[in-house]
Image (cartoon, rainbow, N blue to C red; front, top):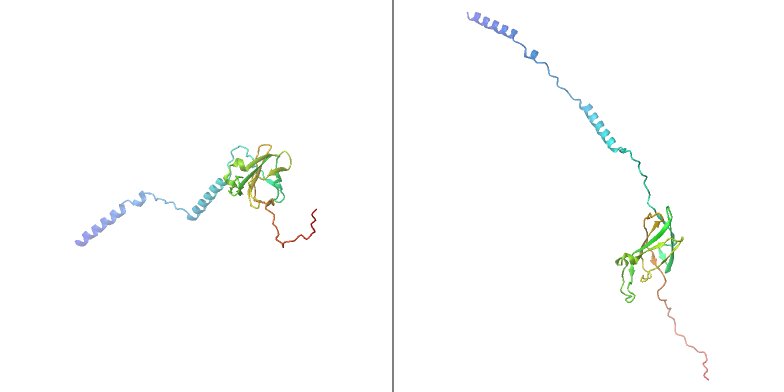
Length: 206
């Protein structure tokens, strides 16, 4: 009897498993997209390089680009030796890289000066003076200009000078800097010491 009951229960279990619906058949399989790491890395690098290349390219605004104008430079012709000034009045001539000279500006930047003639030992620096007192503008009426050494400069000292030009069209050149030494030979002559001499020529008194 027990065996019969067991057989019946086993038969019912088999029938119920055979007739139960399959859950996997009702729900479709979900496809999970996979990413190719190698391909994505290459495409990302290409996108980055394309973006950088686009940033480097100039943007065409449609407006004409004005040419770059080089500044005017000067070539010093006179004095021929810019390291030494040997005269109280000397010739100054410059040649601009383009254009025609309108005027030449000379500015004394630094160096000792005895500004007060009543106090020759009261020496100060040129830079302490107003610019109007240490700068001059000379019209370029001829090729060579005469420049006078200002009073109060000390012979044998070195001075800082700069020069620039203004062209006839108003354009201003770059500065030319000089560091000449003033050598006007204004120092007292050196007397050579020697043995005393006696005048032995005859002296006649009438």
